Image (cartoon, rainbow, N blue to C red):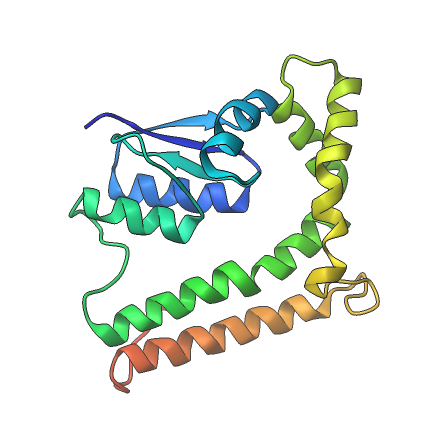
Length: 197
């Protein structure tokens, strides 16, 4: 099989999800850093959007959005299916994916853009313009990061709601464990599950 091309960013949470899926399926792939020229020449013309990850399949199709990427790639190998066969377990897996994609994104964005913003700016700049000077990379990093950092209030992530001590994270993690346990109980048909400690 010709290698799949994964266009993405080293610091992209969703590129990491697609990469982990490809590795788990043991599908051959080449990861291509989404520099400015990759966005201009490939990502935007082929998908119509400015988001990564994007995969190019061996048949020449381009797929964007990790859930759609997983759906497109899963049939390419019988190894490690993305979702269980049982309808209940499949539903549980899809619910867990939804929690991870939509709800765990909030604390991830909070930490990245309030506590690690300088690091993120540097990474975005380095990966977008590896040929540029450090000052130019910083300028591009700031420009690229602004829409992400500016989206925090739209996601409900504000300093008023999440003070520096960030107690919400502990609550979110506890809620995620509760949700995970509830989903696990549901997918096991209500049977008690043994867990390793």
